[in-house]
Length: 359
Ligand code: PMV
Image 1 (cartoon, rainbow, N blue to C red):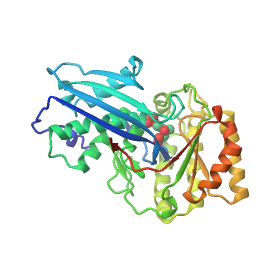
Image 2 (image 1 turned 90 degrees about the vertical axis):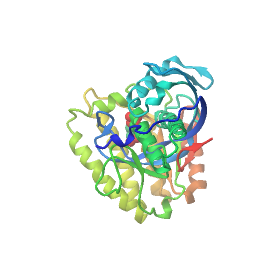
Image 3 (image 1 turned 30 degrees about the horizontal axis):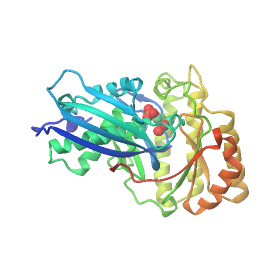
Image 4 (image 1 turned 120 degrees about the vertical axis):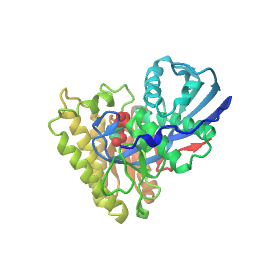
């Protein structure tokens, strides 16, 4: 794999100070990534909708200093210094230092905040790492002005991936594929690429209402979950199935077959959780209300001849996906029938978005 392309090869023109702010979104996978090898190489290709309203805003102040042996940074989350978040970010800097050697020449002060409630169960790693990666690449562009936008997007996704795999899919939108796949032109295990084919209009401005079923700390982190796919009895079949599903969804997205879309997306969500149920040790991230909601969605779809469907992340929250033309009716349904299953009746209305934004 050609990681050499991401090394800094030209002479850099260092500047004394710089500040960049980026807003990067979360994403929701339709074909899921679950299982990886080192360093953050996915066992199968995945595809996600980029979201719009669930995002992280991060500012990094860079101040030039004597080159040091270790990376020097302070971290503030929602205005407060957060020592407990630092080890994960320090580990990220370690993984990318080969590709961003200039981080040793700067003192970095990072200020970050999320648009969604803290510990809402919405994974902030995708938006969080992609925002840091965008700020780093803004600095790199300043130090090396010849970089093209195409290369910047690619390298940002490459760096973000080393923080959290799914973060590689949070730079662009509305649909991003990560993982090498024979039928997706340009796809790579190293970075996410925009879905390269024309998408049917039914999927424009697709809606995602996120039902906050459980806001607690997950009992099993996704790092542990990914690792349990090593020696998992169904792993190889699962990786093959996901790649086959990517072939199928590519056709579905282009042709607009909504029935097939629903079937594939819901099956992917349940298969992800089936992998958790059949891991050793086994674990369950769904809650009773997750199942209540799924059953209500199935009833509603049947009765109203609706095109809503659900998907799940590695958690108990439910993402309700539906076409824009059902926005009013589904909002009513969520409010009346589903919000009662959410913690404090909370849910977030989101829609598909276009990726990172410079602020
Ligand atoms: O990016 P990670 O390591 O947090 O893993 C994310 C895994 C899922 O959200 C469950 C699936 C996916 O493809 O986003």
